[in-house]
Image 1 (cartoon, rainbow, N blue to C red):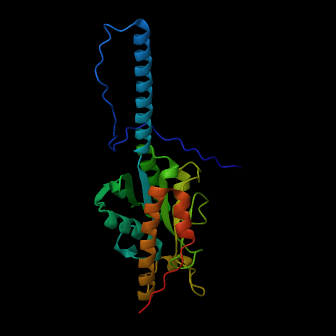
Image 2: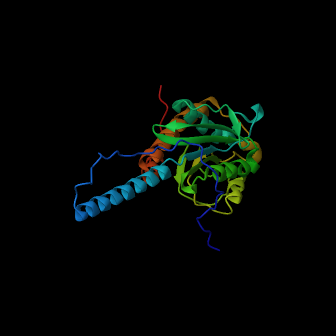
Image 3: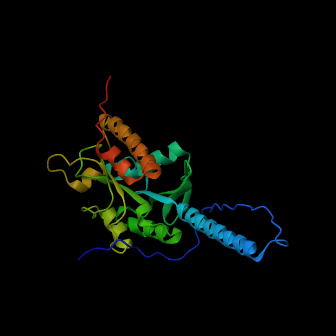
Length: 259
């Protein structure tokens, strides 16, 4: 069955400021003008109003925020584990851009701000991984965010450690957090996702135990480089679009630690 890429959302008021642009026209006396002149001016005025309205509509559309979500599990027990690299990526963005994540809304640690002049919402669902969609779906519905402007960041065992992959859409790949998000999007998979590789479990180690492991010192150093690459990828995504960001992420060479 073909999955559609349209996601209905509730009609709720968007809380970010909307910029309005208006142009003041000089006063013109029409008392001595001919009927044809009056008609010409009226037509010109109507045309200006139409252009202004079109511009305002465009500006309103452009002020819809990006939602950037990192998936993970809440609490100190899970802090800095492989399953929480999505949280770490959002923390990296928040720190670099000066966005506070101290609020709790929609069952998530939540922050609103700007990256340059682009409005963004950062979120770290606190529902535990397997119910992440409860939080993400509520945010998207409330703020009427188009799914093409929802970036979900999560860990992926199918990628080599510290490797990034940016995709425009796709399934959950067995990731329970992504499965929950897609379920709350009514099965819609047409939203970008940034996958962060955590590698495969060694030997016969249970995958569940593996994703709850912390990092070695060497892994931590390598991951820190990856998080900086991810930050740059997000900036490119917001400023220059998906294709340029994907090209940066998917063709980036692995940074080797020296010294």
